[in-house]
Image 1 (spheres, rainbow, N blue to C red):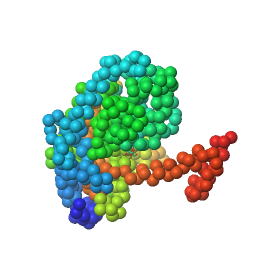
Image 2 (cartoon, rainbow, N blue to C red):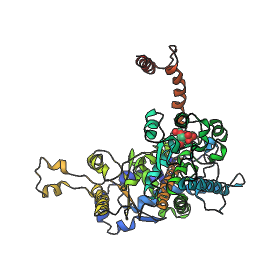
Image 3 (cartoon, helix red, strand yellow):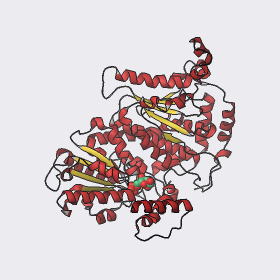
Image 4 (cartoon, rainbow, N blue to C red):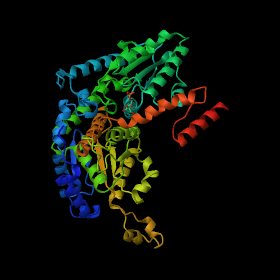
Length: 544
Ligand code: F6P
């Protein structure tokens, strides 16, 4: 790939930098000067409505941000991804999660082969298996019906499935119990199975590589638990274990028949895989129909991203706004607040998607960046967050742009609950943007000594994403919205959002330390003095 001009040298970057220094318009003034702003600065796409009017932007800001997208070659990058070019340069891989939701009959060619039929073959096999588990025709080793499904995986092989399961619980088969085991901490496994019966439990071992320490350790523990619960009969594994992986040899070596393996491909990144076979637990929970409708939602957002002009393009706008605050105003974080209890794991899911993707410090050309890359994404569902960390967002000293996510129709219409919930979403963005001045506080008769404590500076930016109802289709759209937002950020920062070398060093060092903790003899420790001291202390206390 041709070396790109340094980002900070681009005319749009320089203009944005100057513009940010001149930008002295608080949101109060911006709204006062433009009565149409709330209607004007909103975009619709694929069934989502994005209100971005409560941001520190003018038409000029938007113009410059869009110019930045042009100057960084965003259009070519998007096209290259959809064409299946090997844009994951450091791993020499294509990035084709969009093919996972391409409709049957479409064609996406990779190295001359159309990958869409492969995707649909796996989806059909998954659907067949999911139906068997759901209708009880897939029986456990002793002939009992499967009632519990335990997904074992970590990172992208856990966060997507657990997030989607929680998000779509309303649509799930409540006669089945779902558990998700990820942590190598034995507590995770022990708690997940403590009330389950092995004869009625199915394990899905989900791992792209099938070598991840946490997953393989948990899978081995699960196999022991299962065999023990089936009177020591090792052949029970056949009916109680299935695998989702790209590594057939390792799956077979573990003892899972390749007929019970659901594959995917190296062009699907772990954190972009919840709509591949990694979504098997989701499909069993909600059924193949709902799963396919989630895929259709993903695809609709893909099409919006691929075709909508940048000024109306939701992922592009979301990404440009994040860049505006991170790079030109030093915002370190972005809070994502879903006002929907079923999305409680969505912020955790986004953490991997955003930060494992764009937590990078060198460009695609291997040059150290001189600008910040991914902000820290975090959040909790509203209204709970309002009663914990919102104080800091309203009155603290840090700039924390927020993305609020809300739905017009509740999944549980209970009395006034939903109006009260939505009133809180709207009230929060209003309070954040417009605050309360000293004069307003004083006019309420608040004594002078107390008044400063009751002032809200306001001018806190937020986006609001509104959809009609949390359905499988809308979930697909929401996830794709953020996937593509991450892509746009990465393209502008000229980094690779699709590798994750940063997790390797810790893994390698853990492998070195494991025998030092387990060996019977005192090991020769050649770490720094802190690590050596902790290892010695652990060994000593463990022996007592
Ligand atoms: O944390 C590193 C990572 O490689 C993630 O990118 C990935 O989602 C996770 O580990 C799990 O990997 P695997 O699916 O291969 O077990």
